[in-house]
Amino acid sequence: MASRTKTIQVESHGPEARGEIVLSVRDLTVAFGEKVILEKLDLDIRRGEILGFVGASGAGKSVLLRTILGLIHKRSGKIKLFDVDLEAASEEERLRIDMRLGMLFQHGALFSALTVLENVQVPMREYLDLPKRLMDELAMLKIELVGLPPDAAGKFPSELSGGMIKRAALARALALDPDIVFLDEPTSGLDPIGAAEFDELVGKMRDTMGLTVYMVTHDLDSLFSVCDRVAVLGDKKVLVEGTIEDMLKSEEPWVKSYFRGKRARQLDLAARA
Ligand SMILES: Nc1ncnc2c1ncn2[C@@H]1O[C@H](COP(=O)(O)OP(=O)(O)OP(=O)(O)O)[C@@H](O)[C@H]1O
Image 1 (cartoon, rainbow, N blue to C red):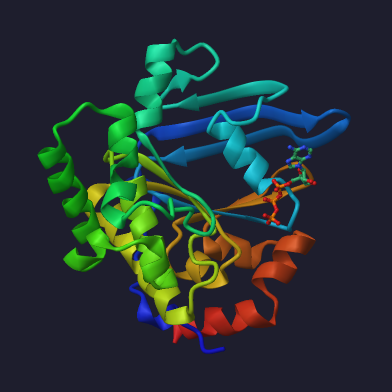
Image 2: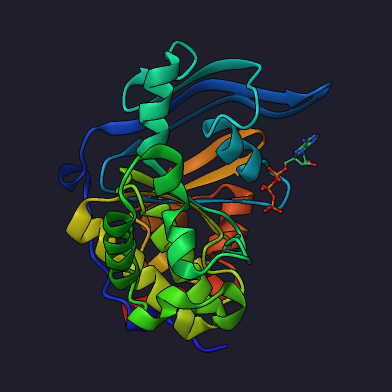
């Protein structure tokens, strides 16, 4: 398969370009009965960065994501979003925080019985009380923002290509102008060109809107081309974190085989060419 790394502008976002910590996880332990999935895990994300989150299948990436979103109870530890401890947050604070988070589930997960426009309006209906005309205008803006043609608004998910579904799902994740979007394997199932375009779109949103992105991915192309920082989950915690350069230097066995395996080497060479 041809590399798609060269199609994307690689932009360096050093620590000086990043803002305050918007998500902080400390000493997080999550278990199902006797089975401990995450143990004393620490993680930070700064405003305006794209963090790529990787790890072996079954390492606990989805469990971590769902715990951060409050869908799974933690056993111990602290999760702070925008400096608010989620456990201590009042219902109103929690609601305000939820409105600042966007989520793109794996496989798009659009409602099949709703049009794209109606899908994008789902979070608006849930959290805001706006007249229909205004919601239509706002949804159309989001649809345009993600690069979909206006006539996609009236289409049902079954009438869209895989890439268009991802864009529509991203438009929905952006419906409330969130500060952070969580993307769960956003490029899975896309062809290399569609995946590169999606990465490019996400990078553009970081650059133009200062969007913070937490991206769970197995896609080496995304990690090489658009992620500012990478965190590797293993042994129930964040094993290694840093830039792609740091990953390429790491001697940690899983990181080494993942980032310096044959496929990764081809991508690295392509990116440097
Ligand atoms: N509700 C649950 N009850 C019991 N065990 C669970 C539950 N949810 C997840 N697990 C277990 O937690 C572990 C981590 O799963 P998780 O889905 O987070 O892995 P992952 O890193 O996202 O994997 P993949 O890359 O394949 O998506 C697995 O062993 C899984 O079986």
